[in-house]
Length: 95
Image 1 (cartoon, rainbow, N blue to C red):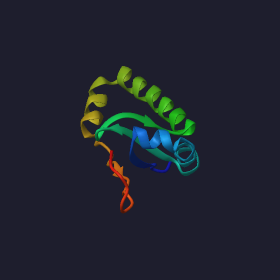
Image 2 (cartoon, rainbow, N blue to C red; image 1 turned 120 degrees about the vertical axis):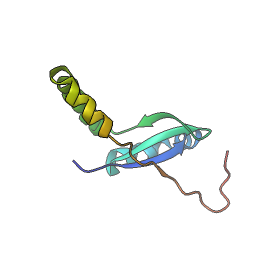
Image 3 (cartoon, rainbow, N blue to C red; image 1 turned 90 degrees about the vertical axis):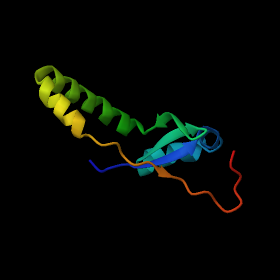
Image 4 (spheres, rainbow, N blue to C red; image 1 turned 90 degrees about the horizontal axis):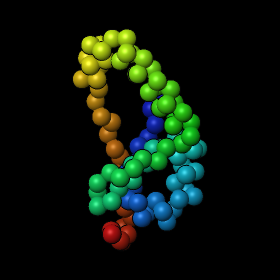
């Protein structure tokens, strides 16, 4: 499973470009962190990525049920992924 790209985008911009955002998520495996005033509000992912996440969640739940100590150890080692901010075009208005 390849590591998906992550892009940060304002909610208003995503709304205005929803067709392109969905196509990029679906075809290019890009996850979008939707923000309002630079604060994350939601994440838009492809159906494929959502299904993978559900499967992984079931595995995590099984691990936690079988070995809570190992689960806590692995959780402590987990690191958040870096969000790539979209570069604005010269002259583009910032809301």
